[in-house]
Amino acid sequence: MIRVIIAFLATVITAVQSLLIYTEGKGVCFNNGCEIVESLTTVTPFLFNVFGCVFFLVIFWCLYLGRNGSEYWVKFARLLLLAGLVAEAVLVFFQHAIAQVFCSYCLVILSIMVLLNLLSGARQVFRGLVLFVSVLVACFSLQFGGGIAAPQPLSEGAIAILSVESDGPELTLFFSKSCPHCEKVIEYLKEDNSCSVSFNPVEKIDGFNYPGVEYSDAYNPGVNLGFMKNLGLTGIPVLLTKEDEQIKVISGGDRIQHYLEENCREAEVVEEVAGTDYSGSSAIEQTTYNAFRVPSGQLDDDCQLDTDCVDGEKSQSGEVSVQ
Image 1 (cartoon, one colour):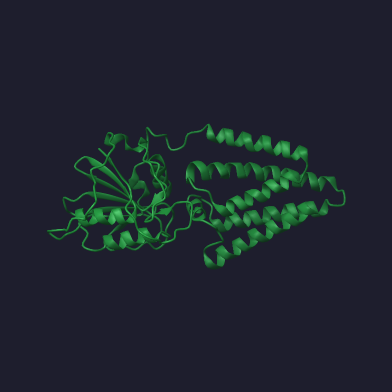
Image 2 (tube, one colour):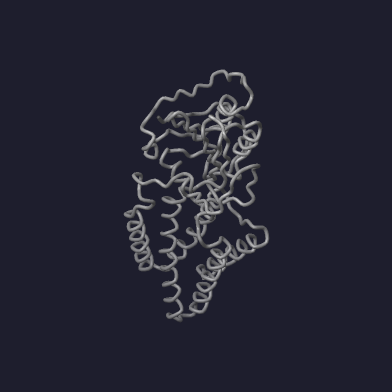
C-alpha cells in the first residue's frame, strides 16, 4: 500500500509541475540547474512532466489493482519501474556530463523512482541496480562533442553578437538570465562601449534585448557550458577577451567591469583602477585553450551555475591569461 501512496504522490507532483509550467511558464525548482537542463533538451519541460505524470499514473493503477494479489498487474508495474530507472540513469549522465549541473526537481523524481524500486523487493532491487549501473557504464564510456581535440566554436553558443568597428579587443561574455551580476555587466556594456561582444548564455533565453546586435535563434548553450567546464569555471559572469594574439579569461562582475573601464570606453582618457592587474600568470597556445584548467571558487560578485544567486557584497576576483 505504501508504493500505491508514493506513486499517487508522484503523479500529483508531476501534474502540478506540468500545470505550473503551462500557466506560469516555470515549474518549481530549488536551484538554477533546472533551467539549464531544460534548455538543453529537445522535448519541452511541459511534455516531459506530462509524460512523467502519465507514467506514474499507470504505475499507480497497476499497483492499486494488484494490491489484492493480482500478480500480472504487479509484474507490469515492476517492469515499468525498471524502465523508469534506466531512463533516470541516462538523465543522471546527461546532467553530469552534458549540462554539467544537476536539476533539483529531477533528483526528486529520481529519488521517488529509486524508492519505488526499493519497496518492490530484493529481486527488483538487484535487477534495477544491474540495469542502472550498466547504462551509466555505457554512457560514461562514450565521448560526446568530439573531445578536447575538436571543440565546438564559441560562435555556436552566441545568442547575439555586437560588431563594433574599432581596434579594441573582441569579447565573449558568458552569462545567465538569473544572475544579477551578469545583468550589471550587460548594462555596463551599453554605456559607450567600443568593443565587439559575443553574448553566450549558459541556458536558453527568451527575449534577450541589446541594441544593435545580430541575433541567432540556433545558438547552443551546451557549447558555453562545455567551454567553462574545460576551464574549471563554475561561476558567472565570465569574460573571454581576444587581443593581439592573447586570450584572457576574467571571472567576477567587478573584475569584468574594471576591464571594460580600461579597454572598452570611447573616452580618450580612462582613470586607472587601483589594484587591478591583467598580466595573467599562466599561458598556453591559443589553439589549445580549450584544454586549459583554471582554478575556480565561490566569489562574492559571481553566481554559481548550480545554485540560486543572491546579490551580496562585492570583492575582487580571479583572472587567467591565455596566450
